Structures are given as structure tokens and as C-alpha cells.
Image (tube, rainbow, N blue to C red):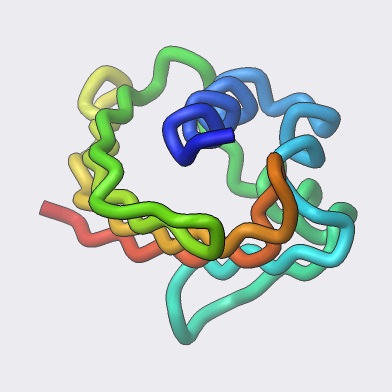
Length: 115
């Protein structure tokens, strides 16, 4: 699986908010950090609960991205999340995805900066 494939699956989960779609992205013991020094969810149950606690609704946003680099261990992704369709703001994003298997992230860290 490439980083692009994984991100497309992430976008699917982002739009659906289905727990199975969210779990399918991560190893069972994965960590999801909402900032490099902030709150971190660990394991499927915490990741799903945290995701759904702060979920976005379908149609509330658009997301464009560029894979900066990727290899068998890590992918770096730059993106732009636009919440203006729902009256919100635009954010620049940087994601670090550390792989824990062919199709799963073991560590996911995001940075988001409001424009």
C-alpha cells in the first residue's frame, strides 16, 4: 500500500465516521497524536472514541494533500483542510505516518495551523 492509498482510506473514514473504517487505518496498538506535544490516543478504542468525539460531518470540509516523501517506515504528507463550506477556517496540515505493517499506521502525528 502506498501513502496515497492510505490517505484515500483516511479520507473515506473522515467522511464516514464509521468505527470499522477508522480501525482499518491503524495497528491495534497504534498511537494518534493530534499535535507533536499534545493529546495522544492509543489503541483502536481510544483512537475511535477520540475521532468520533471531534468528528467532522460529511460535506463540512475539503482536503487536498501532497505526499512529500515516503518509504517502508514513514510517510510525510502536506495538506490543506478547508472548512469554509461549513463556515469555518482553512488549515495547513503536516502529517507524519509511521508504518506498522503493509496497510496500517503504527504512529500518526498531525500538525495543523490555522491560516
